[in-house]
Length: 372
Image 1 (cartoon, rainbow, N blue to C red):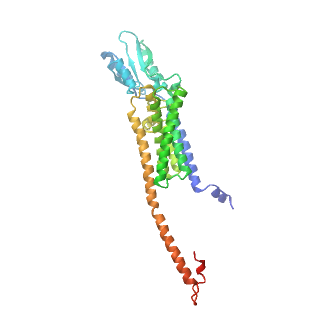
Image 2: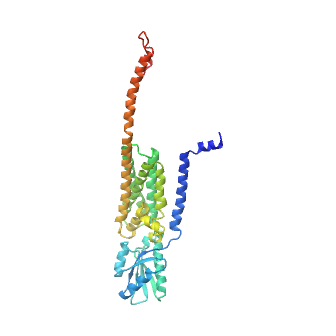
């Protein structure tokens, strides 16, 4: 046997294709994470300006014209309104000008991401430094002292996502990636639902009462966790139902390679490049991180859109999984019937043939006793 033959025996064409796919995922992982996170800078950050009318328009124009376009400023009627908009996550910060003094206030929310809060403070200081004015920062929604850089929400959601697609992968690999019938698909969906509830409660228990890393509603976080795990798991099951074991790689592509760096974890969304900023809110890690931070630091505000996105992933994943299992059952449904028909025909044919060939001229059945 030649060396080429040995290679062919050791690495089948299917294995070679899978290895090529893994290499592609590896390179995409590097490109996505480095591309998203290697040079964070704020761009078009929603930012309020509270100032006397004669100063407001001029200051908004000046902030809007900063090199690189870090801010998307807009006039806000009062400091109270600016705080309200920050807590509703409509803006990420605001500058409140004191018309009777030289010390202005920049309102930030480190609970939404410490890196962004620090950047907004730095930008406003630089803008006002040339006007002999100083700036003091007020954190409207401060991150917990035990939540360094506001990262706990992100890592919590990442853990939920990892659990979701790993559980789905195990369920599929253990008995075939494509559900053989509707009953098996329903059972897998039920197991995924139970696992999701346990995972959501467990994650909320660890991040809250055990470690004290996040404030906010325990049951709110637990419910979010269950939805994140279920959405991630069901979309993984659906991809495996569509493509077989390749679906695991597709799930990694969506959740890990595309979803994690665009989730706004290490750096909030306004600090990411345009591509990652665009896809992040539509993927489970990004939607989950947004809701977790809202529950922890923004009184549960502005979560409807992200919850609907997570629910859509869960619904689509469940529907595809169940529909494909029904189609597979229907497609395979003719096989047992055909086999039965052939089986019914074969014994008769065999018996007839045996009788015909085993009957001698004298009427004896020499071969008949061997028929089964």
